[in-house]
Image 1: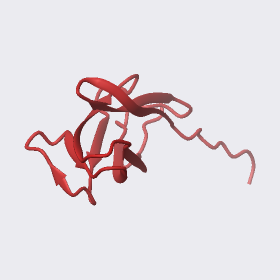
Image 2: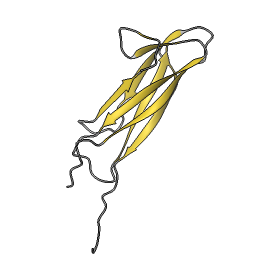
Image 3: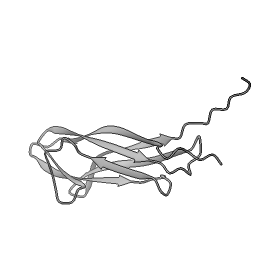
Length: 115
């Protein structure tokens, strides 16, 4: 089995939206889906105006969008060609109002034949 480098990681930027006419707190949830044991997923809100004491809640101004950084790190046990999925879900009052599912693919191993 080929071991991956410990720095196998990635980052994506997503937008969270408040379609309502008043500012509101939204709950953010990460569903680990098929990520392997030892994988990490982190959510950072660098431009958020305000966060709740529960770090998975963010105040989004009325009719606005806020960018969030989603970063992940895979364990060294993953194999070339493996694919995993996880989701980021946005809720308001317990109801899902947005979100996306992302697929992370481990690069295939390159085999060179000859010189």
